[in-house]
Image (tube, rainbow, N blue to C red; front, side, top):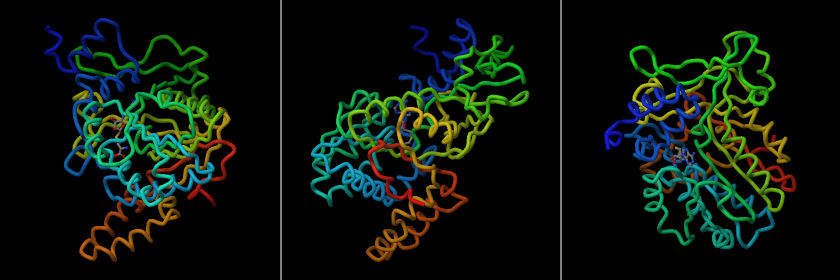
Length: 367
Ligand code: SAH
């Protein structure tokens, strides 16, 4: 009875008092996904007036170009009669809507598509059902890729990997220790270090390039991404797989604490107002590629969003839209700038594709 009236911060304090400090990954998971108080399950945070804006919300062209890319991938797979089109973390469903509209101009592709949405937030499932309800394809929601059935697979995910919880490890130059969220003497949340050095299996998770760092360095490990790569590799053993990920993070593994909280488009303290602010951490594209290769998949270099969109025909599509809607010319130019300018999303965001060994190099990644 009493616990129902507590907010997430009070519940976290209670858990820490009872069981001791929790790993950063558990803290991130509860803040983002706790069904009662988590950030995503309790709100729709995406849009100009909300907490943050994403590429598909900036311009319809983003999802349209991904739709063309997917149609091309389906053709390379030999135009299977049925293909699973999975989106992980679909937000408002805007990108899937732009993809399905674009696919509509290729009827054989459009009718092959089985849509699956991997979404942990009940609030966003409702928004997606509303956005996508008018399309001919039936919609399926799933908690994980493994639930989407067997068969050829196309997967897309924009700003999904950055939400997957990270574990943080800190070195004293000799040993590694896990970073936890505990309580300070006043009862406020604070970061603390574990007392016992990491086990060898945990040390093996650290990117090889970062294992021998000097004192005080921090590295981040993302177990959910490793498990997603394993699931893709399993699928690729019996069916073609083509998976596109767009996210922010460096091309090479880097040390450093990248935990970042955003509220109303501003950076805030990740330990304050838990469950009310978005928490993400950058994606380590080098480690992602190493894991994918080790699992037997092919992987493209992580190219900049700017380069990929331009290769896929962003400027041509923008010119065509501008000539159809001359009143929107300035707006479309602003959107293109936002998606591609190096000071905006153009170089911060990277695009990587993981795919079955029997498929050719996917469009937009040729050098
Ligand atoms: N791709 C969308 C939304 C990005 S926000 C866009 O570009 O606008 C992150 C999305 O991932 C949200 O839909 C969120 O609810 C979902 N999400 C976060 N963690 C998840 C998890 N572990 N499993 C499934 N969905 C998750």
